[in-house]
Image: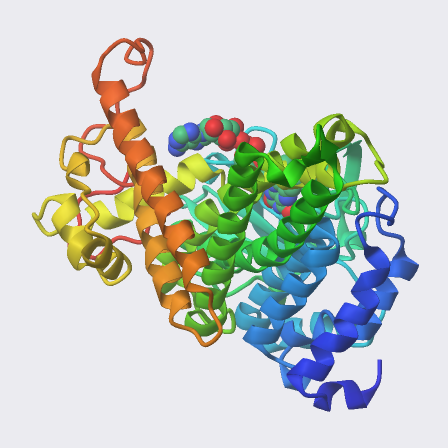
Length: 503
Ligand SMILES: Cc1cc2nc3c(=O)[nH]c(=O)nc-3n(C[C@H](O)[C@H](O)[C@H](O)COP(=O)(O)OP(=O)(O)OC[C@H]3O[C@@H](n4cnc5c(N)ncnc54)[C@H](O)[C@@H]3O)c2cc1C
């Protein structure tokens, strides 16, 4: 790490990151936990610097945080997640919300090019989606806090030096707390987990019994889980950057594969349905490029992101769905070679395994879609949902310009409808972003048109699913739990002060 690195232009800085990232290409890099020496190559190239404030030795740049992850994900998607967890999930809340004393203690350790790792511990064996069910507790202990409990599926379970841990206290009514814990203070990995993909990252079941000094409690409202939602927003938004880098590569490689592969008299790429699959991959890339443009220009990971809640929910769900669907198309095109570990002709098997978890982790897409609908319902002010969306800044331009008919949303929305409606809202948001992206210099109007048509087909698909649910043949009523009386919104959805009660 040199001081000069702090003064490079953004383009030169990113070029340096790309030069190092190319050594980690998925096609050749082993499917193994990242050794510390390899992480050192990346930290010395400065991958952590954009996250760190200048006073702690960083470059302090939102755009560079996005561009670093986009660049790395093109070479190696799991490595893009590796960097995202350390920067967007673990260090960002410390840089934004921790006390000066805690920042001085932790952040400089990540500025010097050492192979330092940090993780975020929230999920527990008994709860992931409904975090109010957490069992990890904190209590006053001398001049600090004692934290006890079990967490699982944490990225860097066995390797992180520092942790951000969520816990609860029920002594005087429910209170949530977030603590910065040094591994040696009492964070133990009881059992390693073997994930299907993302092999560069180590996972496991962890036990915490740690006493931390008072200054390591993050300043956050303890009455609800909104601070945790805020802490997860950067990584959810960064799915657009990861998706953009990953799908740029998949689009390029799927076309090259289909041009090379001979099927019958000609190349595979001459088959009309193959061309349809390639177009589907390309449109997914376009959609992620547009969402990434929104992330870089309209969001700011350097400040409180709760105001961007609906946009981030839409980005996370749409981008990750697109990553998975494009990886699926690519794997199908690669035929038997796409089911082969370490195939010399393509990376599609690994790409699919790596992309698979994106719709599950960081908040499962089904829950996030439900919350997006709830966010909107809390603001309709008596309007039918479709009318609200026609005026809402995040969807209005798409609905007007594309003549979208979302009237099927105007009905009593049960839980299953809330999830599906959230998807439709996410697609409408994405159409607006593709339209916006199409206006950028150099953007390809034909690509934008195709992406918009795919998204409109997705909305039509949701409308069809509403019809399917109404047919009554699915029998999903049997055994379904009714919502709690008088409660309309999940606790983690930011609702206006005048909205009806939360669940
Ligand atoms: C590879 C990987 C990395 C991870 N990294 C971390 C990490 O670094 N730190 C951390 O703390 N955690 C991490 N996690 C945990 C992850 O965030 C959780 O797995 C995720 O939030 C889902 O929680 P769960 O596994 O308990 O699933 P559950 O809550 O049991 O949900 C399972 C499924 O139930 C359905 N479901 C749940 N709620 C709803 C709803 N409201 N509507 C419709 N369907 C619903 C969905 O189909 C959902 O996918 C990671 C997980 C994986 C697999």
